[in-house]
Every structure is written in C-alpha cells, then in structure tokens.
Image (cartoon, rainbow, N blue to C red; front, side, top):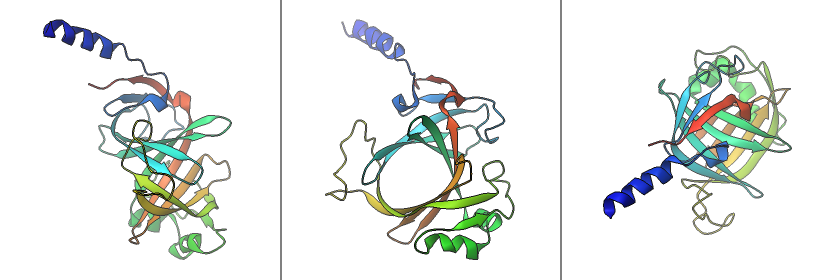
Length: 213
C-alpha cells in the first residue's frame, strides 16, 4: 500500500502547474527571456527560488523571492502591482558601487527632509552596468516597514507594528524619469544601510516556470 501511495504522491506533485510568479515556492525555477532590455545577469537565465521573505508596510505586504542562478549573483524579486503587474528585480550593491555611481554628498541628500533628492549618475561599475539610469528623482522618504523571514502567503505574520513585528527598517526610494529603474535604500534600526538597484519589467519576461525537485 505504501508503494502505491508514493506513486500517487509523485504523480500529484508532477501535475502542479505554474502560471504566475505569485505561485512560486522554494526550489521552483523561472526562465527569463533573452531580451536586451534585461541586464546580462538576468538575460536568458534560469533562476531558482532559494528563500521567500515578506515586507510589511502600513497598507500592504509584499512577498519577496530570493533567486539564485549559475552566475552566483543573488537577485530579489517582488511584484509591483498597480493597474498592471510588473516584475521588480533588485540587485544589492556595495558601498564602492554607490561611490562609483553617485557623488556621495549628493547621495546623502536622500536622507534630508522632506525627501526631494535628485541624483545624476557619474559612471557605472562592472556590477551596475545596464542596471542603472542617468538620473533619479526621490519618491519615498523614511517609509517604515517590517521585514519577516516568512512567506506571508502561507504563514501568518503579525499585525502592523504588532507583537513579533519583524525587523523594522526605513525605506527610501528613487525612480528614473520612466519609472522603469530605481534605487531602494533600507536603513535598519542598528544603523546598517543596504542599497539596491531596481528594475521593473513586464511579466512576459518570465518565459517559463517549473516546480523544483
């Protein structure tokens, strides 16, 4: 009986179909298009979901998929949902990349109230090439959020600012004039600051998805 149960379980698992990115689970794989609108680190790549986290804000909660490819570059995926849904890819960059991209005195104005920073790109590093834009305008100033190492779709997370609220941070965000590329800065309570270059792409850039083992 146990043998037949295992056969049926295997067949059931194989029947799982992925039709939208919001169905992705750990170990699932996405295949991206070879569009030249994508950075080389993404173009034509197969990326596997290695972890799932959640970002909780006052009026919304976002699921984050951590993606890993053969090039050992870690990519973060969220869904930007408005009138249409876009893929939001994020690449974490280091201090030296920020120093190459922007004049640091200009970059520091992001943290000045009321949050009207305007940044010009100096030049790209090898890491940021095809991820960055020439100019950015600030859009978000000190938005409070909470980071959870949980999948909010299947695990309950606390009410906003409630008990077990996750790790608190402040979000600062900028967009280019077309709002297709951006910069996200997360400032954590311990003072640690993380900088991400963001890229907004149509959902059709995912050309295939299939369940992981």
